[in-house]
Amino acid sequence: MLAIEHVDLFYGASQALKDVSFAAEIGEVACVMGRNGVGKTSLMRAVAGQQQIRGGHIRWDGQDISGLAPHQRARRGIAYVPQGRDVFSQLTVLENLRTGFAVLPRSERRIPDEIFDLFPVLRQMLGRRGGDLSGGQQQQLAIARALVMRPRLLILDEPTEGIQPSIIKDIQNVIALLRDRGEMAILLVEQYFEFARDLADRYMVMDRGAVALAGTGAEMEEDVVRRYISV
Image (cartoon, rainbow, N blue to C red):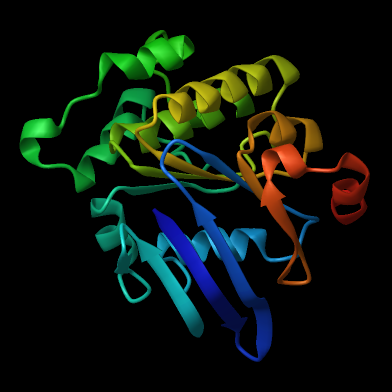
């Protein structure tokens, strides 16, 4: 459903992405791996429309969305959870969740009960400010806010960064559940091999802005992949 085709991206004269091609299908987790600074976040921002590409195409549902603005992509069912979470620190948890209403028709502007089934801790914290939450709780809030948008493509940029192990496992279980429902594609950036290995249906390893390795999750060879992700 998502096709990234021969994408080039530049920051001024510096090329961040070089002829990158990848795909993410409904009912799958497509995992992008690599060290810091190799272009992973640039690729996610390009898919979300926050960074314009200079060459190639990004297609969603068979339509070329390369020229669409971020809000137009969001209305087509693309939700982006950026690295660092970006919750609104002065808004309450409930208010943060309601920001996901922006792309929905008025008749659909409600928070599904499922959100609190997936992230029970949020139900207890609806009146707390986002900035008062722990890192793990903020990450759960950021994912929940994206799910309020009813996405069909969920982009997660390093959801395990700075998170305690117990919440990492909770997030892994939520991603697996969402994948197994077969209603959305999940594009996941991850540096931890075990987390990626356990979730990925397909994977790509990036190096210096280009594709170094790609294949199905079953084909991931730990020794080979670790050479590209180890610092």
